[in-house]
Length: 319
Length: 319
Image 1 (cartoon, one colour):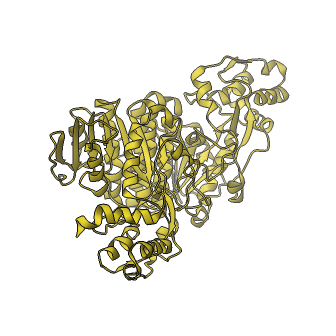
Image 2 (cartoon, each protein chain N blue to C red):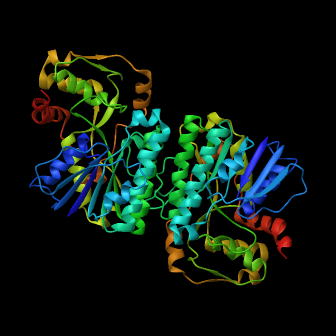
C-alpha cells in the first residue's frame, strides 16, 4: 500500500508513521510519504520518503499525490489557539488545504482512503448532557468551524465516490510528550507532563472542569483502525466520535498523585485563565462510545494507566 | 437602511423585494440593490437599483457591497438537482460565492446583518423522529453539504463580529408559482399548481411521503423577520429551523380536492421516479417549531389555506 501522512513531523503524525512501519501494522505499507511544513525526521527504512511541503501552496496537493495513493492520513492542521488568533491563516490551512487534498485525490486516486482527523472542538453551544452521533455541531471556535466544514466535505466526497473519505473526531490527547503548544487544551498534557519532569505547571481551568481524553497510543491505533474498516460500515455519515474517557482536571491530578506521589502532584497549581477557562467550559466532556466501539475502535481503561503509558513510552526519552 | 438582495430575479427574492418596498415592511428601506445573474425586473421605485451580477466572479462581492450595506439577504443559490448533477458548479455558487460575500462584508460593512437562506436539505442520514435544534446535519446531497458548510461559516463570522450573520433553514416552499425547476422537491408545488392551471401533473413520490412545508408568504415574512431580531437572541448558534407544517403528499392532494374540487385533483397521478423518491425519503418532514416560534417566527395554519393563498395571490397573474 502507498500511504501518505501529513503533519508527519508532529507528535501524532510521527507516531502514526512508527505504527505503520512496525511489523504489527494492520496496513501493509510498501511506500510511505511523510510530509510536513518542515521535512519530518528521516528514517532508516527504504519505504520512507520525507518531504517538506506547505499544504497551503497551490501546487502542494497535486505534487504530493502525483504518484498515487492508497491511504492518506491528513493530520496537518493549525491548532485551535492559533486559528482563533489568525482566522485567515486558520481557514487557509485547516479548510482550504484539506479541500485541495480532496480535489487532488478525486482527480488522481479516487479509490484512496482519506482519513481526516477532526476534533471534539466541533461541539459547543447548547449541548445535551451526553454527546452522541446525532448531536449537532455548533463550533465555539474557528478551529472547530473549519474542522466541521471539512467533515461535511469529506462526507460528500465519500458519498459521491470522489474518494473514500472518513473523519474521526479526536478526544483531547493526553499525555502529549514534548513542549506545550498553543492548543486551548494544551494544559491537559502539561499538568501531568511538566510535574513528571520536575517542572511546576499552572492549570488555567478549575479542578471540576471535565475533559474528554484519549492516550496517544489509543488515538494512534484508532486513526489507523479507521482506514482498515470496510467502506460500507459508515453508512450515510462518514464521521465517527472516537472513544474516550471522561476525567475531571482534579481527578487527573489525583491520578498523578497515585502514580507518581504527592511531591510530583504538588507541582500543579491552579490559576484561572479567563479565555481558556471559558473555551474549555463549552467543550463537551461526555460522549456515548457505543457506535465507535461497535466499529471496533479502542478505548483507554482509566487515566492512571494513561499516565503510566506516558512514563513508560515518553518520560525516559525526554530526559 | 441600505439593503441588498441576491437571487432577486428568483421567486423568493422578488417577493422579498416586494415586501421590503411595501409600507408595512418592518425594515425601513432607503436603498435597495436587487441583483441576480440576469438583472431583476426594474421597479417604479426610486430606492431600487437592479444589477446583473455573477456572484461566482472574483470581483462580484466587493463590487456589490462597495457602497456599504445594512442588511443583506443572500438568496442566490444553485438548486439541489443541479448541484447534484454538477458538483463543481454547485460548490462554486453555493459555498465559494457565499464565502466571498462574507469576506466583502467583513472588510466593508462588518455591522451589516447577513441573512443566509439555508434549507432542511442539510438533514439526512440517521435522523430522530422529530428534528430539533440539537439534531446533527448529515447532508444527503452536495446542495445540503454546501448549505451546511455556509451555516458554519456564517456562524463563525457572526461569533467573531466580522458580520452579523444569521442562517434560516427553509422548509420546502409550496405552492411556488411559475414553472417547475430542477429542485428535487419541485413536485411539491407542481402537484398543486399544475392542476389549478388545468394541467396534468405527475407526482414522482408515493402519497405517503411526508413533506415539511411553508407557504411563500410565510417564508418571506420569516426571512425578513430574521433580520429584525436583536443580535443577542441567537446565542451560540446562529441558525434557526424555520417553522413549517408536516403534510403528506396524499393529504396535499386531498386538500386540493377540498379547495378546488375532484376534477382538478384528478389531474394528479403518481409515477415513482426512483432518484427523486429516494432523495425525498431521507429529507426530514417533522420538526419541533418551539425555538423558532419563541423567536417570533410565523407558521402556516394548514395546507388548505396555503392553496387558497396561491389561488388568491398567484393563480390570476399566471393566467
